[in-house]
Image (cartoon, rainbow, N blue to C red; front, side):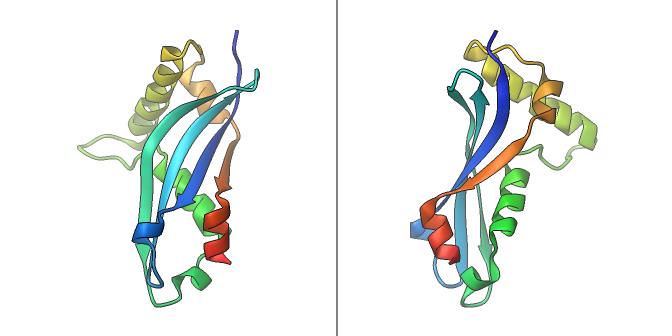
Length: 128
């Protein structure tokens, strides 16, 4: 049986959309497996932030890490759904992605895993 050991969100700077007043970041969520493999769970996430000139000086690695964990879910409730319903749907979806790759893990177990955020060298350099 394949075991998922942790979740990792990899972040990178979107150079084409980033300037002195705007930050744009992509985020990819992966599950790391005990056998050394990884499975991409979400690769369509990211965010942008605008601010005064010099926004890089106002952005910390902690800000990036916190926002990255937020954008890879669970999403905020909508259409009368509760936070619990949104979270259950999110973790079930991710468990389904893993099942498609032959990794059987309960959604509740995924929710409890450690979740690291890795900033690309390009993003770290931009922050300074």
